[in-house]
Length: 294
Image (cartoon, rainbow, N blue to C red):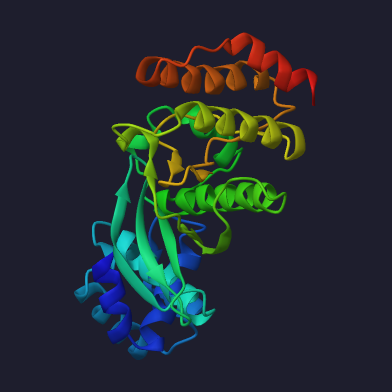
């Protein structure tokens, strides 16, 4: 990601346009021929070839020479550059900071806008390994036919961003969504850490009740269930403020498996606080109170 940020400063608008032309072509095929890249970019063939050579030299594309016609596709760095370029052009961010979090499906960096507001920048990195269990991601992919892995990351970012908007506008405890483009989300940054990384908490009962209350309110008012809630995606600061993050697997409260998935989320939280802080709770009673009060 840092390489993409550095390259963005050196690339010309014509180089960006060539990358965008490849991106357009990838909606229809895995690799995009030079003829189609020329068509989408609207450049003469000489300019198209010159720009293709340049972006390939920077290692922003993958070239396929095994077929009758040479063709290209974007790699992850090329896709990063397109997303960062758009976020900068829209004045959402101006600087990219260091890596602050790394997960199975995404990386999180700090970033800043022109007014020195600090945000979290989440970039989806789901690949073929993540899609061994395709059913897990069926609510993202739907019935689409051809899909590049880059575009699947775009769908994932869009799904999470929409969930953030829905929850945040109700003044509930999730990061404020600032903007998104392609596979990148920019959101509020809480100066805290995930629950799993705390050795001890001053008032764990208060924190437990706060989490359960937020789950109740999100279910009741936003009609959403997190779907993968646990100590890794609840952030808390030293004052006990929390944010619930990672809404990729969220589902509607009207989903056929809603009660089962809500139960799993509740039980994950109850088990964690029971094991680490000896807080006893009745997960079934909590689930019933959430569903009954909807």
